[in-house]
Length: 186
Ligand SMILES: [Zn+2]
Ligand SMILES: [Zn+2]
Image 1 (cartoon, rainbow, N blue to C red):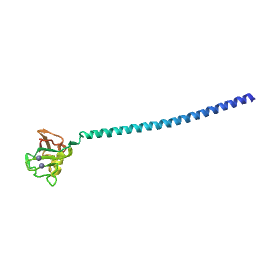
Image 2: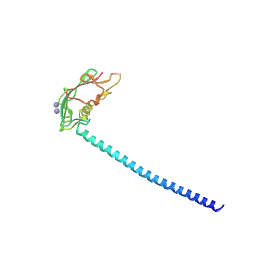
Image 3: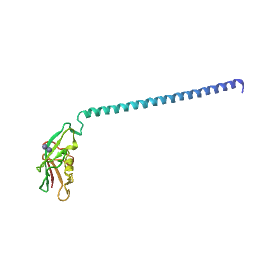
Image 4: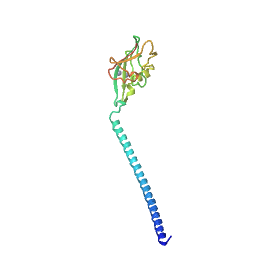
């Protein structure tokens, strides 16, 4: 090995060292860039999510200011609907003074005619006009299977008619002013 070769080798070695150094620097820079980019990405995601939450809260607010789906009235109702119950053709009496107490329930009766008074001041929610609420106040059973203790079987099944039309909502039906409600087991 002569001097020239040695020099060349040294140069080669230096060159390789420089390249390695450069590579290390580059990957360092890349890592830093990745970190920065990662942080920026997280920031963007956080900002985006915050904005979405802000929007949904804002929308909910304006929704609540209008008429949310759960609210029937904000300043009371006094409606009447008629309820008639027939079990195998026999009319069942609707008791008088159901839901009448120191505080009247939102659905109550004054007599045995089957007239339901839907009467409440202030905020009225769907549950206040739901047929199941009346049966809860009455302490009797009513759903798609049973009326009182008479349940679907070989003897017949429960039918709900609202203003003459069959209705599949049964206990979930929300009563309206002037409704003629018939529950039949036949
Ligand atoms: Zn009334
Ligand atoms: Zn009343």
